[in-house]
Length: 359
Ligand code: NAD
Image 1 (cartoon, rainbow, N blue to C red):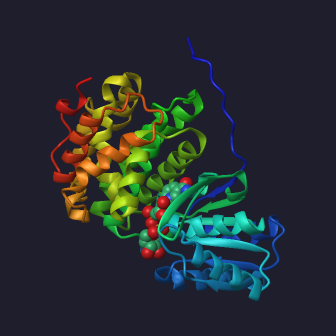
Image 2 (spheres, rainbow, N blue to C red):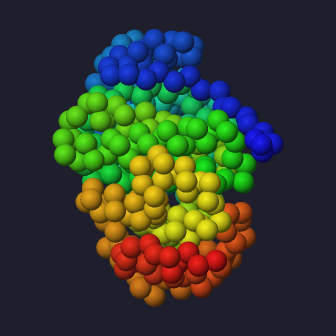
Image 3 (cartoon, rainbow, N blue to C red):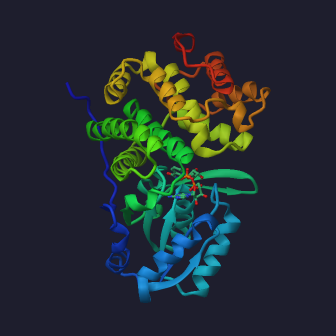
C-alpha cells in the first residue's frame, strides 16, 4: 500500500538546455524586470560581464563580491549596489554562494530572481537561505527566497573544475539520498531522487575522463536539478545536520565535507532505511550503496578524509557531542558512540563498514 503523504510543489519556472543562457533577457522581461543587477563571485566576474552584455538595456550593473556562507556584510554591500544602480531584479550567475546572495537580497527587498546555476549545489530549488553574521550561521526557510526562474545551461558548467565537479555532484547526491529516507518522503520526490542519483553517478565518471563532455555535463546538471528539487521538497536528516555542524565548527569547505561524510552516514542509517538503500543501490547499479559511494568518490579522485580538509583529530569528540545536542529526526536514532565512530572513519578515510551500521 502507498503510505499517506502530503506534497507541496514549489512554484519555479525552469528553462533547461545548451545555450539557454541566451534566453536570460526574455526571462527577465517575463518577470517584469527593467533593470537587472547581475551577481557573481570575483572568480566569475568575466562571465557576469558577458551575461550583462546579453541583457542589453536591462543590464543595470554587476556586483561580483558573492562569497561562501552569505555573510551579512556582503549582502549589505550588494544592497547598496542595487540601490545605486536602481535595480528592480537580480540575476545570479554561479554556485550556491552566488545563489545565496540573490536569495538574501530577495528576502530583504522582495525583488524577483533569475538564477543561473553553474555548480550542482541545488540551492536554486529551495526556499532555504543560510547566512552568517559575526561568524554565526543561521538558516531561514521562507518562500520569498525561492528564485522565480532558473536557467540551467550546460555550457556554463563546462568550466567547472573537475575536483569541484566531483564534490559538488556528490553534494547533490546527498540531497537525494536523504530525501529517500525523509520522514515526509513522498512518491514523486522519491522518483526524482532515484533518477537524480542515477543521472549523477552515471555522468560523473565521464566528466572526470573528459571535462568538456557536453553530454555527460548535461546529464549531471539534469541530475543536480532533480536533487535540488528533493532538497527543497522534503526534510533532510543526519547527513545534512552533521555537515552543517562540521562546516560551521571547523570551517570546512561545503561540498568536500558532504562528499566525505555521505558514505559513512549512509552506512549508519542503512539498517533503519532498507527501502531507501534498495533504491539508492538500484540507481547506482550496486548492492552496497554506502560502499559504492565511497568507491565512487575514490575513483573520481575526491578527498576521502576530513583530516585533509583541516579538521583536528581532537575535534572528533566535539563533533559527536554537537551532533547529538540538538535532537532532530533521523531514520536511525542518534547514538553518540556510533556517531563518533562514523566521524572518526570520515576523519581518517577508512571505508564505511558494517561496524558503524550495528543497530
Ligand atoms: P560556490 O558557489 O562557493 O562556488 C565555488 C567556486 O567555484 C566559486 O569560486 C565559484 O565562482 C566557482 N565556480 C562556480 N561555478 C563555476 C564554473 N562553472 N566554472 C568555474 N568556476 C565556477 O560553491 P557551491 O558548492 O556551489 O555552493 C556552496 C554554498 O552554497 C554554501 O555556502 C552552501 O551552504 C550553499 N548551499 C545552500 C543551499 C540552500 O538550499 N540554501 C543548498 C546548497 C548549497
